[in-house]
Amino acid sequence: MSNPKFSTKNTKSIKDTSIVHQRHLVLNEKYLKDSTTAWITDSAEVIGINLHDPFRTSVSINNKMKVPFKIGVHKAVGGDHDFPNPGDLLCASLASCFESTIRLISNKLIIELTETKIYATAQVDVRGTLMIDKSIPVEFQSMHIDALIIAKNADEKLLQKLIEGAKRSCIIYQTIIKGIPITLNADVKIKN
Image (cartoon, rainbow, N blue to C red; front, top):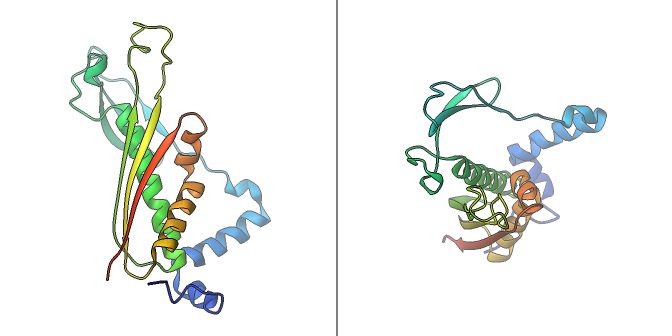
């Protein structure tokens, strides 16, 4: 079933009902008037406490909110892996940005999502960081996303366009893919 609201005739109804579209109009005007206002800075800060413990720390996310988040070291490099590690945070960043982008685009297109699930993984050969084999780069070698998108009022073609739009507009996806490959398996379904 295609989205009846999404046609050239009904563009005005999209503008009237999409909160994302309404907010983007305001932002577009603002950024066109002064492009310097489009620059943002995200942040995280680690202040070392309990420095005698090499396996655990805490990161404060966002400069204003300072949301504390415990971090552990992965068992593959000697840690206890009792808290999420930085690689987990990288995956969380990719998954959350990709899912948020899908929500924003869906709202603009008046696609009624009934379920989303984004699962991100990252693969790394830790022999490089442990200096066991200096020919192995100290970096993640690849990442993967499994995406499940279920919507009521869209056809499979529109949902595939949604996935492509998310790939193109997701800041974290676009940043990471410049350095390492990201594969994507998208399962899109129409709910009757």
